[in-house]
Image 1: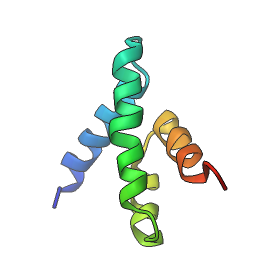
Image 2: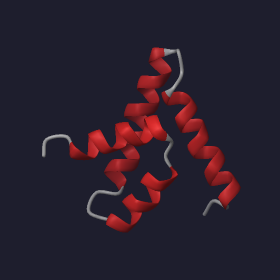
Image 3: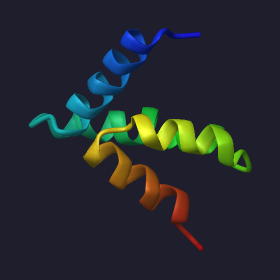
Length: 71
């Protein structure tokens, strides 16, 4: 498991990738990392809560949209 500092750094890197001016990087982070986190939490509300509370604003918006896709 990650300690709090490592977890914060990891989620900050995800947010930085989402905010990148490099569209390819932002897309890779969105589809490769954020969507994988959402998929991993499917059916596990406790895990989803832990993930969503650590995501940055843009990452969180994408995660929620992906989670709600098709509903």
